Image (cartoon, rainbow, N blue to C red; front, side):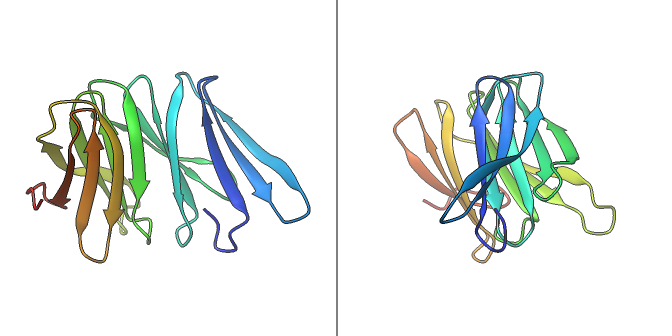
Length: 159
């Protein structure tokens, strides 16, 4: 998650996200973020210095990777969030859930806040994996329904 490749983030069912400094000769915990719900997934991106996580209560949280400060608490899923992914520039976040949908969250540069820009439906099972490519403006998702799908940022299925 850091530009120098030395930050690692971990999620835990003990309701925490931990940020670690990882170097060739040693590792140490930099921060522990305590939440009110189990944390099922975590993602970061090098360029933007942010970490996102998804929780059992259906929320997505965005934190600053440097100081672990809360940037946003995002609500929109009706069930636990099983996956999160960030674009390379950190301006787009995709979350997938047991509610069988993906939500695309966009960070507005002027206001600095995060907003839902699209809700994507089409899977018939829990969405358990996601990846976002900001360059091609495509999202890939994997589901318990045994399918992998590719979408546009607006939610149109490509594959």
